Length: 485
Image (cartoon, rainbow, N blue to C red; front, top):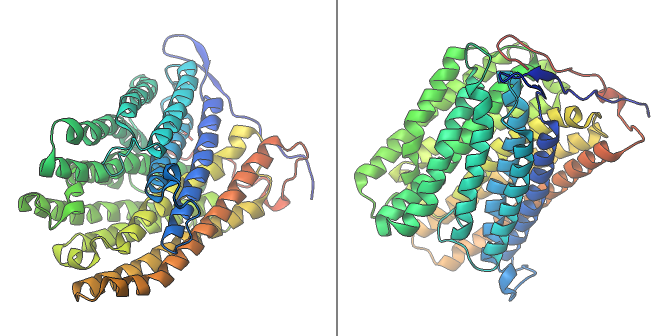
């Protein structure tokens, strides 16, 4: 059915602590960051799919140096981290931080400058990677000259949002802001440690240990606090219930702060790095599982009596499926980080499946939930098609499930064959069927992305007001106790 159905833009004004009357939420900047995030993840998914062709001897750019498989892989991973996740987190911060503090960000003009500068840095860094200027640091392959620009960009982001938090009108700080504040402190430290020290001051084995810390801390001390922070905001808002326990949420916060920084060395078990550092990484990684369990329990109890909302709210489905994936990956990590398990799975496709479930099945899913919830509020229009959103949800969910299961199985097969000293070619032969299904999962994720992009575009530009009636009018944003939603 065709009908006119628009959502009024939410642009309340406030008198700031400096006596100025300003718009509380900069919806334009939020919208621009989500558009950039979706554009970058589209390029990143295509790059990842192209890379999967290499294993099936189908790579279309053989012999073209700029598009060589190694550079395409680095483009895939870095776009996911700095193009998609970072843009989406900044867009989400523009919505959440002012609403929790009652104060706008320092400057909406600075927000626009950050959007332009950050995406110019991402584009320049991708050009550097494709032209052979990458650093030999995993997840830090961005050219060394671009690292200085990234540090400046991160500093501007921190200043812009910290201003609101410092001038908050709330007497107590909601747990979401605990996580965001911690991320503002940890992220610059982690980035500088991983991109400068191994390159300039700490070569060799010591540098390798720092790279291991950097790889994992980028996930644990930047992506994770941002992800948990958004979960603690959006799940209570959409489910219209306060979080079950603020005390448990703080247990998770301090556990993350205490245990996660030591995890990274587990990337280099059985290496020349001193064994005390390796044992410390194993113990702290297992301890993180306790932290994750408290977070999962908190959200399960928050949803108690509200599970029926999953039938109607696609945004809640993204959050809950992502939370389930997070528990699986952390439970898996507690076992795979042991020295015994590492003998089998090290350097196999098991690790690739694990990392995709974390970065895509968890944090990308949570961001998909944020986009699902916020896009109508940012554009003033309901989603153009609920069916496309459902296709997006199921294609990504089934796609990542297929990829994770497939790579986990062939990872074990590879590890057992290598451990038994069977010929290398034999492991290749057994892996090919798994690599084929990985390519299929990549196509599913790409088609799911197309559904999302088309739906966002049509919702934004359509003047025909094509709205599925079943989707209209569900769950207006609520303000449950404890969340200034």
